Length: 115
Length: 116
Image (cartoon, rainbow over all chains, first blue to last red; front, side, top):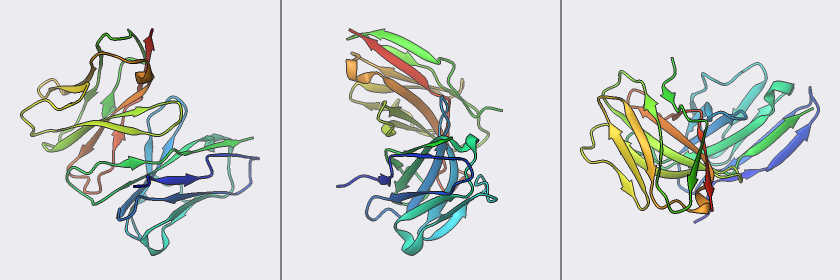
């Protein structure tokens, strides 16, 4: 079974440029998460989807960040415009259902460097 | 206040020896779950072990065991017979029941280095 797929793995952009990250969760997983991981820190949730609905986006900086999960499968996270402080690893995770004990399966992440 | 605290930024262990990675947590929710993840240099978070707040027994998964002390709010990870491939960052995480969506709250991590 394929794991969570993310692309690109690495991205280098100049500040003020837009950038987008893509995530394909494990087949059949209804819940999708985007986490931000700063260097030397643990991941922090940005947004959570249940199918195509964003049910927790309280930590998403909505002035520059946006996300979508069309058809409840793949998801895209966008930053426009990027700032120097956005340099981090962006992790996508999925799980089969909400609530209870549900292990979250993580992708390899996208490492963003903003120059 | 920090919900998950990992006080050891870095740890060294000799190959084949056991090592304990500390984790304390803070919650008022009576129902919660505790997780440990391993993150090698490749970046992927790998699930290791889970402990539910109502579980009577300490969780074990192969060489990994979780020393769960509920009254002290600690959930330390014990790795027995360390291997060179165990060198990685280790994160403790918690999910509270009131958070129906399963959001994980992570600690800052401990970097484990296994010496040959």
